[in-house]
Amino acid sequence: MLGEAADDHVHQQRLQAAPAAVDAAVGDTGAGGDLGHREGAVAAGTTAGWPPPRGSPARRAPPWRVATASAPATGSCAPRTTTAVPSSSCTATAPAHASATPTTPPCTASARPPPCSPRRRTGRDPYDGTTLPGYLYRSDDSGAPRPTVVMFNGFDGTAEEMHFFGAAAAVERGCTVLTFDGPGQPGTRHRQGLMFRPDWENVVTPVLDYAETLPGVDPERIAVLGASMGGCLAPRAAVFDRRIAAVIALDGVYDLGDISTASIPLPRQEAERRLRAPHDLGIDAALEAAMASDPSTKWALEHGMFAMGVDTPRVFPAAYLDYHLRDGIAERIACPVLVCSGEEDGFFKGQPEKLYDHLTCEKTFMAFKEREGAEAYCQSGAQRLAFARIYDWLARVVVERPAAVGRIGRALAMTGSVVEAIGGDVWSAPTPCPEWDARTTLNHVVGGMRIFAAELTGTDPGGEHHDDWLGTDPVHAYKAAAEADRAAWQQAAPTDADLAKAMVRLGFGPVPGPMAALIHLTEVLVHGVDLATVADRTHRLCEDLLTHMRRTGMDAFRRPGMFGPENPAPEGAAAHVRLLAFLGRQV
Image (cartoon, rainbow, N blue to C red; front, side):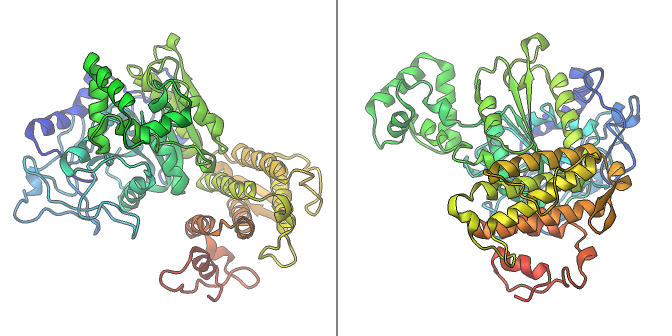
């Protein structure tokens, strides 16, 4: 459990009853049935089928774990002696048909749990001295690493609502789920006074830090789902935290400024100027009149003021202007993204299409239609259909796909963002590769991708590694090769079993699939760093590369002529210095 529990008895009783209400209210909550159920996929780190076979105990009776206690930096959260309740009298209420056990850490049935903080990353956690309230769901008590969905709501929704907006269905699919309220959302705004912030990566990163300490979480398979306004916040977090293996935008939102300025009959730039102005009597009067004549408008503006922490109606839509994925932000996402869209969405119509069009990563547009009864905002009233499809997609791109293949996809996107930043005479600039300029380095990378793709698909690459693969448009050549490379890995190794059986013929002979994937990943990322020195983007790429390489079997490459033993890096060293030390260089 992440953060603070509900402190009022009625609220707690409602939350405890929620899991039991699932079967009675909606039956199978979207995990399968005849609506896109997928059989036979394998959960990471286990031998059990994912989703569980029809009729299995896991499908009939998910053992809910709706916890109500905070988690501290140390990894355990025993209540203070002044408020402790014996753990034997403190179990999370579960459905009668579920095999419930006390949650860990212990919770309190009627008293507020002691304040505990999630594990923090130095310099990134904006919540010193407080916590984020949320709920941890586990599909079983084995502690085995499982695909994990971290999810949150939007403008006015709660973590509790997420039980029915994806959490229950994900647990039935064998996932671990962590839901939470971020700043500005009801739990934190009412109890801790935290207000919305546009840089949502500084919210998600400490949550992922905490999630990685939990049993049952596979750190290589963490997806993030954002609902409503969260459909803008979740994609943004993925730009800055490369641990995210996939994003589900339910529904997709590209620019909330479009919503703020839609009712102002002025060009966008002028509307923004007037919203941000210290004084604007005309817009102030129009908003006051709208609030007086329409209760829904009055509620929306008053809640927006409360959630954003502002004191006039006009400053709320002005604050919304900062919530967007413009200016190249969407283009920097590296992981697969699912953009959902309701045909008759009354709040964000057109926004999913804008987000999808700006993505350069692996992406899927999932449209829900009126004829399906799923056309509404966030597919309200059609969760069974929506999450059957959504989690089928997640199975393909995260659960079933080998982690190594997922890393390659993200590496291709990260290096691609560097390639797009190079242009003009910069292609002739030197790189850390001796005697190789930027163009020669990229040509080597593109040739390697083409050859790998051909080997994986049994086709002719169309040239030798040293040939000119870039032509007159190096950026386009990279994009086309990266797409072919990504598709080839996904086709040849859709599951861990397929990757284990694969053999890839390289210049020095046949190589087992897992080793070939690691070689290719290292090639793309290391030369991506070479190119980043030219594009002046070394810090972010080196951070990403170091994170990925720490998770891979680098010891196999620590040999003469390749990489030496890891060396210590000075405290507070720059990203590229820490990367060089990890690779065995003296720094």
